[in-house]
Length: 153
Image (cartoon, rainbow, N blue to C red; front, side, top):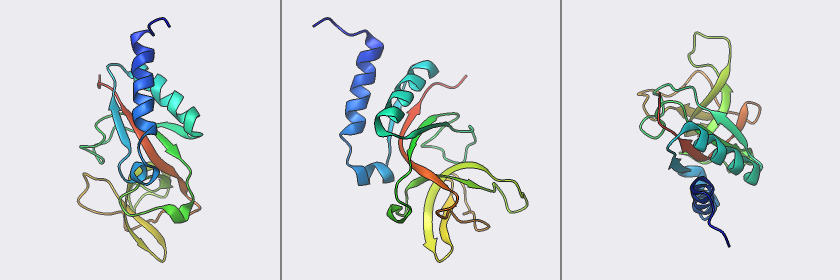
């Protein structure tokens, strides 16, 4: 067998590491792999999204999820059953960034508390939770299963 190019070898190594993580653990602590370039991260994230039948997003680059997510990062999300969500899961959903804004945007934050209205969310780096909205089965887009980081410009 011929040697694989370095990038493909790194990709296969990363895929093996991601696939070996238990499903429940992935939802609470998704695998995070750092790549040398944005192109390498995109290639790996796209392949993993196809492999898991998930979706690929690029985070906005805000500081709300630091130190886990710094700057723009690719994240693979999988639409798991809504009732399988647990506290500390990273969710992607449509919500309002603040109570004074009517328009919704796609947000990636951590599930911090569940009540009769849905999941209360917060960024890891935020001192507050988003008490003005809840994640429900209607606005839930998916659970983060892997993070693919790259150096920021």
